[in-house]
Every structure is written in C-alpha cells, then in structure tokens.
Amino acid sequence: MRSKPNFAGDERAIEGLPIRLVIALVVGVASLSVMMSMLGGIDGLVVTELDTRPTPEVVGPGQQTVEVTVVDPDGDPVAGATVVARSGTARLDGARTATTDENGVATFELAPSLGPNQADGTVEFAVKPPAGGQYVDRRENTELLVVG
Image (cartoon, rainbow, N blue to C red):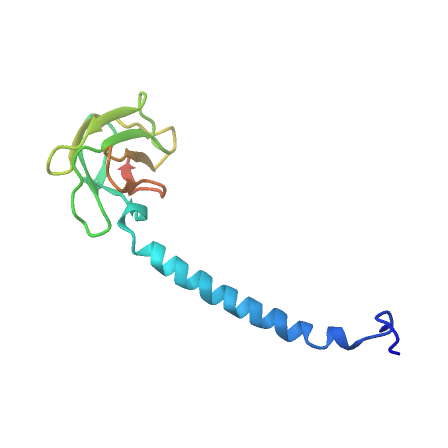
C-alpha cells in the first residue's frame, strides 16, 4: 500500500518557478507590444499636437498688430482654432481671444508692457483646437518676445 506524499519537506517545487516567471514575462511583454502597435494604427485614437507661430516674433512695448498662425507638426495651418493671448513675463491688460481663419491665422491687437528694469518679456499663447478634429494643445506654444 502506498503512503501519502509528504509535501512539507519537498523542496523541488521551487526549481521551475523562476524560469516560468521569466517565460510569462516575455510572453506578456510581446503580447502587449503587438496590441499597442495595433492600437497605434487606428486613426480614431491618434491626436496631433498644435503649435503657434507669431508674426512678428519680436516686438517692442506698446500697441502692436500680431498675427498668430496655428500649425500642426507638419507646418500645415489649422482653421477654426481659438487662440488665447495672455500675459507671460510681459504684461497685457487681460487675455485676448481670436479664431483662426481658413489660412490658420488669428489677428490680435496687443499692447504688451514691461515692468521697471525689465529688459524683455513674453506673451503666451494657448490654443483651443477646432471641434471634431484630432488636435490637442498640451505642450507649451511658441511665445511672442517683447523687447524694451
């Protein structure tokens, strides 16, 4: 008659565990990379970061007409975006908004000012992408430099 096995003193079970964990990790990482590459190809999940290009890029204090072009990473203009100009290290009397035209250009009348003993400053731009597009504005945009 056979006796019951005593598992309390059996140390062999741990022998194959580390290699099994390594295999499971490799298979999991490979599966994850395949799934991520499949998701990357779906257009509905792809978003494009926008940036601003002020013209001129450098102005002095006082009343200025500044055109801001909203562009995608390829440099193509984006129509229908709302651009917000606000004080950076240069001061403005409140925020200003404008919407880009079919050429991706928003026109602002700005009067930036610098503080005492301030040699230069910046005006910041934020972009609200057009509705229904695949655009986002998460990073800092190109700023307007104000030189006194």
